[in-house]
Length: 120
Image (cartoon, rainbow, N blue to C red):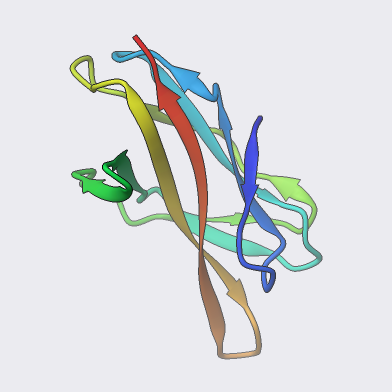
């Protein structure tokens, strides 16, 4: 799966497959934890389309509230993301929030992102 790294504090990536997707098809994403600490994530994600040099947020959700754990040096199960049939061609970004415990009662949240293309 193609991946993009996130800020260096976390050793977590967002993997996606395929890197190019047709309107009406599905995209598989997963959290890839290559670090030494466990992380957690939910089903929610954000999606944006690159237009005229800026990322334009697209509507997503609603999402259920469960949280899933990803042990160190493993990957989560794939989450399917449906690309609507009328989605225009272009460059898109998907983003998820990941939580890592930093202490007994504290945690740190980071966003992981990956880009893909919608092609007709």
